[in-house]
Length: 202
Image (cartoon, one colour):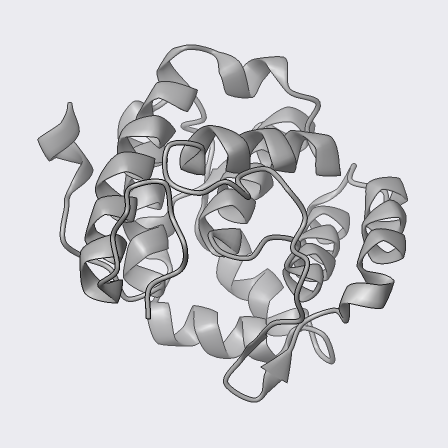
């Protein structure tokens, strides 16, 4: 069963395809219209704004905190009853160094604040923090899918692996639309969608 959506789609594969196409187009707009630069990097408010912008045409819950418990495989994300407290703590976490930024990203991944679209929104949010604080972004095309997924799975206990992977993929090409959009393509690759390439939208 597909998630309830504004498009009236009942097929999960069809919804995934529509979601990818629409949210990639919106991600490109986010970069080109300067919205990202207007948001305060590293806050839950900015993450909500990113999520709402990407998914507002698709889901009623775009930009809203989830109201259900969720899990992926054997990993259970933050229980609903602790979600708001967890996000308040994440908001207060420091983000002035590479290590601090990745630690904040790991905690946000554990929180998984939205019903759907967490990975895509949070990777844009992460790059926004990197860009502001250390004048670098991740070139996601240099990040191996399996290494990344395993490192993120282990990150609540041991974050040295994800730090190593992301540090090796940093670039100072922070104003490049191509680097940004590679990240959008790879966000979907990590989550199992590879239908649309962003160059098709430009």
